[in-house]
Image (cartoon, rainbow, N blue to C red; front, side, top):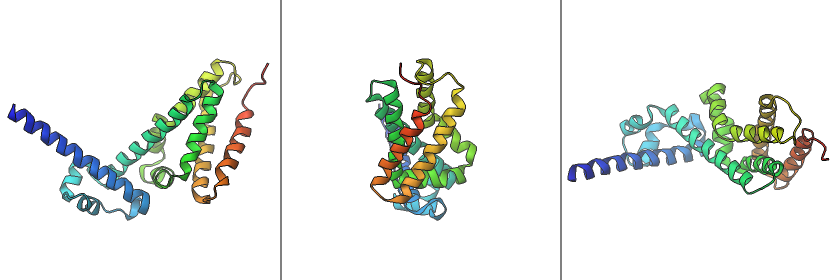
Length: 202
């Protein structure tokens, strides 16, 4: 019916506007940093009013939260996909960790997730988003390895947080080095770290 089509078209237009604002905001947050971005300029760049931008995201901080959630989600998917390409649980852990570290070469991940997000959102909110993506995959992998006897029986929560914190720092360092051998060196160091939690093979 005509009314239903019109309603559907309006919903599609609203979603298209939201996606355009999100994409432009993501580009600017990655290039310029949170504090240099002006929401009105983001709106103007995609051809909508400042009011439309506020309608979708309430504020610049709201747009930034949505961008962080999107980037975190993509990172979690990348980590999970790398792990799933392996069949051995230990190799799944290593592959997921390597995939996470490799994102340090992505300027959007570095600036948005590692530099600005903890400051702008606050540590607790940033950690909550991290828990929903890559940190959750890490914890699940470690729980599986403990259950299989590959890693010694122990509380997984502190172990997961130690490894997660170390990898966040390493990814931030990788983003700033700009040298091609840095990732290889970091992965080698990670393998040494992981070897310390693995039980001796029978």
